[in-house]
Amino acid sequence: MNPNAPETATLLMSCPDQKGLVAKVAQFLYQHGANIVHADHHVDREAGTFFMRVEWEQEGFGLGSEELRREFGEYVAPLAMEWTLHYSTQIPRIAIFVSKQDHCLMDLLWRYKAGEFRAEIPLLISNHMEYGMVAREYGMDFRYFPITPETKHSQESKEIALLREAEIDLVVLARYMQILSPQIVQAFPRRIINIHHSFLPAFIGSNPYRKAYERGVKLVGATSHYVTEDLDQGPIIDQDVVRVSHRDTLDDLIRKGRDLEKQVLARAVRAHLLHNVLCYANKTVVFG
Image: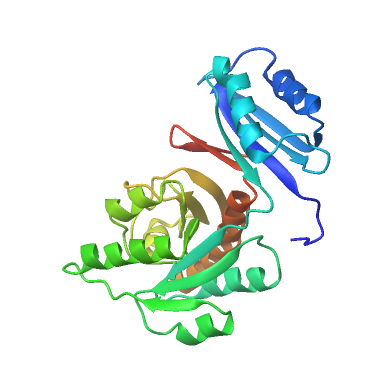
């Protein structure tokens, strides 16, 4: 990310569709001196719902944060609009969870070091001991939480406490091979991103590459989604596929799939950090 980029504010909005919504939002911002730099909108005609993302430069804008929240809230109240406000000066804090496989973790950390994510990653959590040196190399705190069926609830309670203490905004599961219980999902709604190594909804659950190989598929994929209490069924943020053939072995599918997993997870994390994602009805609108 460009550290010299102008400071901006972003509104994410959704409401029942009706005429004039884009004009209403633009007029409000214009009246207060906004220089809009990005604006996009979408209408789900089947659901009758309007979605919009608008971003403007802070320089010259006439409202502070509290004034904007109050005045814009009053302005759109008759529209039954749901909205959130984000500032580029607010740097999100990320915790990464990982198990044995490190390809997604290392890709995220490389991108982080390269400045692709406008975020801080202060915390790395694993149910395996191997990642202490990695965490130290990237200036992160490493915490080891071994998980068994008997200790799962108590360990997740400790993880939740740690995440809150560290003021974590987003949890990224970089091939974390534990099913999260409702208590941790409810503690961070729409703030846990997972990478699943198949093109959902195909091959939900464990060993998707083997299932795909045994089925003789001609495509394998990867899916990044928000975590919900229903396994691998949360709102999808990003997906991709690569072709395979009868000549490909199971190892070939895994190799090709891992390359996809890294790219898809990185794109999903970036979309979330840029406030490009709106969730509704277990689906997403992803601007950008």
